[in-house]
Structure formats: C-alpha cells, structure tokens
Image 1 (cartoon, rainbow, N blue to C red):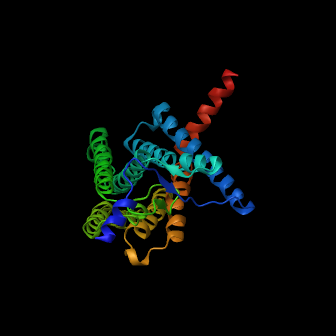
Image 2 (cartoon, rainbow, N blue to C red; image 1 turned 135 degrees about the vertical axis):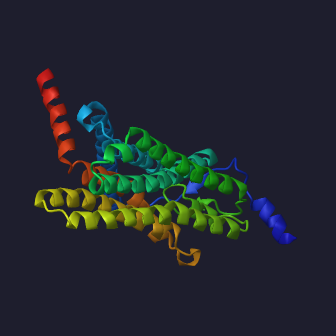
Image 3 (tube, helix red, strand yellow; image 1 turned 60 degrees about the vertical axis):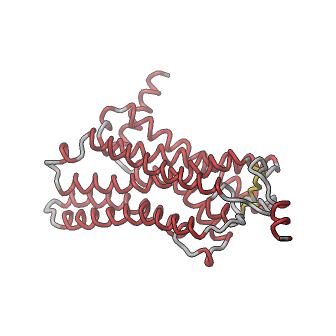
Length: 318
C-alpha cells in the first residue's frame, strides 16, 4: 500500500518532459567530439541531399537501381535529422529536456526509418540478384512498377513497426526518474524507466526484430550467395570486377547496418550497458548515414559522371 502511494506520488504524467542525458560533457575532448559529430552531420546532410537531387535531375539515372539508391539516401537523411539537431540544441543550450510529444516523434521516426531501411536493403539485394543472374529478364522482373511497390512496402512496414513501438511506450507508466540514458529517445532506454511489467512488450520487440531484421537479412544472404556463384562463373574479367565492386559496396553497408541493429535490439536486457548502447546508437544514427552515400553511391561511375555534369553546368552559367 505504501509502495503504491509512493509510485502514485512519483509517477509523472505524460505532460512532464523527459531528460536526455546525452553523450557529451563540456570537457575539451568532448567539445572536440561534438564538433566532429556536427561535421559528420553536415557531410551526411549534403551527401544524401546531393544523391537524391542527382538521381532526380539526371535522366541517365532514372532506373530502378538508382531509384532504390535515392530512397536509401532519403531514409538516411531523415534518420540523421531525427536525432542530431535535437542533441546539438540540447548540448548548446544546456537544456536536456524533451517533451513527451517530441520523444514519441523521435521513437516513431527512428524505428520506422530503421525498419524501412532494413527491408529496402533486402530489395536492393534482390535487384542486384536479378540484374546479375537474369540480365535479359531484368526489365520484367524489376521494372518501375515492381520497384515502386517494393519501396512503398518498405516504408509501410517500417511505419507499422514505429506505430507499434509508440503505442507501447505510451501505454507504460513511468515512476521516479525520467532521465533517459541516451542522446535521443530510444525505446529500450525509455522502457528501462517504466514501473510497468514490460515482459510481454520485450517478447513483442524480439518477434518484431526477427521479422524486421533476420528475415530481410536471410533474403540478402540468399540473394548474394547466388550472385557470388553467378559472378564466379563469368568469363569476362571486367564484368566480374564490376559485379564484385557493386556487391562489395552493398555488403559493406549491410554489414554495418545489421551488425549495429542486432547488437542494439537482439541482446538480452541483462547484458545491456548504457555506454555501449550510446556508442552503437551513435554509429547507426550518425556515422552510417554519412558512410552510406560515400561507400555505395559516389564510388559509382554513373553517379560520378552525373556529378561532373552538374558541376560543368554550374561553371557554364557563371
């Protein structure tokens, strides 16, 4: 009875703000790291925006493959804008609070984009599989209509996952401290503050992770296994090199993405460390959106030509 009264007194309604503990203090080392994060954010913002614009403006890039690349850049752009601006604002202002509405918005967008990107990477693997293993049938197996439907499905499935997580976090009660041991509103960090039994939700999160992570990863592994077998059978050394270059770039992105995702969402709660979670979360929400266009897109000769074409047009207008 006494415990219930204490919980009622301490339980803060959803009109109260949460506190984001962040990852930086005001020591010289952390000020340098914060400046580095702002630099990474700027590069990611420019690189992903440039990719979307290049693919939209250059008609030579109006193919399903580059359409998928533009969607990856758009997702990365939205993901990094979901977390870094608020983190930077809190750090510079000295205020670490975030409203409940802002927290739920961060959860929805971060989870939705994370899930959508997971399925999109599987779609991109399928696209490479079709292009390399069935080049003559590629226009029929991966045309604009099919690629559009697959991309739309990725967005919808990711958004559904985000809605489930937001609905769950809204249903929990939060007793005592409202300090989130993260630099953004992360579901696992937020639920650790809950005074409600969350075992059912943790089971649901695990099931969602299997569907949103392991199932697409299985499709990627199957696709690239067949791609590698097909590439090894190629008689042309130039064709083999080009195929391996494209596949290596994609696999590098997949490795970074799924490695961080499984570390964050598929570990037992007892093995979680706030410091480790912050480091891995900063990797997939800040660093990966910058690396994706640099690794996967700007190494592409067609993208480089499109960029050169835009620069030449800009110089001629001057």
